[in-house]
Image 1 (cartoon, protein in one colour):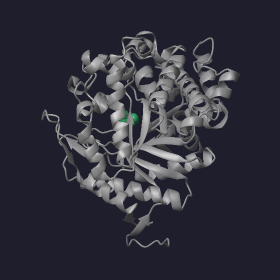
Image 2: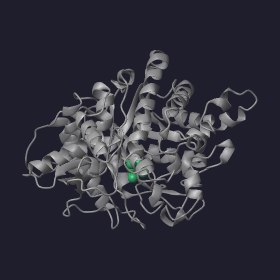
Image 3: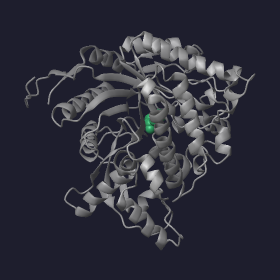
Image 4: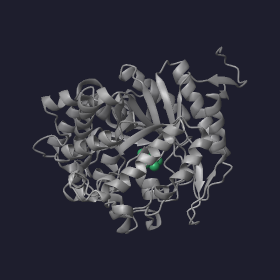
Length: 491
Ligand code: BGC
């Protein structure tokens, strides 16, 4: 089709075979928190402790009930016509204490069978309906037993995660060909282990995020190598890690200091994970020198950012088969000299970030500012920084508040504009984007926001014990996009 600047909408058709999906995560939708021998995870513990850390002390004990209502989810997936469905495995549903000890133990195998069968059925049903499963091994729900042993703070978890990954590849990999090891280690490290907002709920300012991210990167790389050496030949699948990133612009576009500050946020948020994995096995030099200098100034004997050994660098470099990005919103950055006080990672890079006040919020009280064009810029950044990789977007979404209208016209306008930006990224910027997934299939348990943020394409009535799923207008519109492999729009 011809590109024109006219505002008359035209058919923007995506490349043949482009993937259209939706995503969920085990803890956010499954419920059945202690069903059939499932072990507790850190979110079970955290929500059961109360303490007003989660909206109205809500829990995901029941959530969307997907553990028993999978058939209902499948109906939604079929109604949308998704080509891909991304979900995560509940680690402690498969391995109640997080280790492979149980499944190796004869006579105790009833514990494994229930969890395995649940996911087997999901995978088989998806494939029978022509839907490709994308499976995340770990989406924030660490088995409590592992947390009790130090969790991501200890190096020992690298081996434990690898054993779990091998167990999953071996059990499901005959049918699952797209794997994501860890969901958003960059978000988890900060929210859980730096700020203590997510379980285990203990802040470790200045050190927690670096320490745990370091172990997550190693765990991912080790699992990728296990797949590569033990499973790839036979199973012929691909493995990656999902990274979250905002798009960041300088607050004052003509200020060199702000331009550099914006770059530093991208370095911290995205490159500190993507560079080791996709380029050379190591953290960005600027990050290393800044954290080292700041740590020295603060009297630490060594940098608060741990170092990879040469052997680890070799293991980490090149340990992903495609690039997975999650995008929700954008921010502005300003240089801000570190004048002491509380430690945090933005202070380490001497930046302050905030939204442009002209960007609308998705709903009052939401952290999501509506910036569809930020995604195109982010995709171009990934293309230019990481040698034009194959990119999958496995999360992008727009929350509504409670109550959320079924006629979510404003939200669909966000998705429509976003899809239009994706089209531009592919056709004008030549980005190798091959898949887009909406977060989320269903309204679900939105972590510390409980059920007050509604990200679903389908509304779930949490007051009704049957937990009925009803499509928002966005679901109907998205189904049309999928059917046409494109959208009406203008460039
Ligand atoms: C997470 C999801 C979450 C979504 C919306 C992502 O960071 O992977 O679990 O629900 O953002 O906040």
